[in-house]
Length: 264
View 1 (cartoon, rainbow, N blue to C red):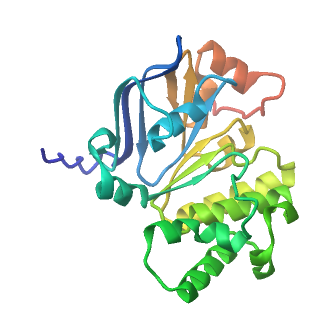
View 2: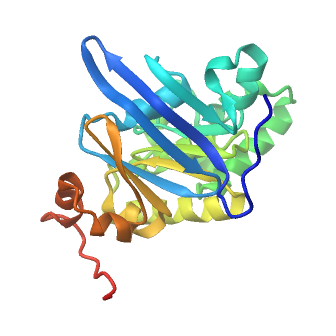
């Protein structure tokens, strides 16, 4: 069945989630969730602890099974993809997990090269050259290439993991709490790096975060999760204006940044 192209004034959808249900045992975490991620945007995905933010990411990536609903990436239903077709689509996304998930027994360079070894058939010398380029792209010095994860600071681990996520030149970048564990200066620098890479590479960025500064500074839109469903989507100004109880508590609580809304 052919896809109907979007109208000129409609944004192209990179990820379309419809009526997705995910549960563990008797507990349902996602309860008929709908979400669109527009191509070329930075979408911040927020919600309370344990509400299922990372669960949705893993469902999209195929790391946890869903009990119902559909997920499309670039118009392709993930349930219908097998073998080479599935691997071809997976090459179009990169993932930065919350703690970096670098392999401790491999150097930074070897970690970056892992996706290349799985998906590409290229020489070792070319692989080394490409991995060094990714290293420099995320702001790491070349001498970091031969270090092991245990020799890196928290910020360097994040950058090395980001370089690995970018190793196959993805179109979608999944970020799971990218600034967690970083000090305010390091978090701000990482936000700026993401923003720069998104604009330079034309990425679609899906970012699970609880960092209010990230939401204010680099997100085009925000989607909020509560009670297993998306309760609101929109700009930071629209989130601040919402009357939903969780959004009011989150964006106007004691630790929230205060952003003056324009007067009508």
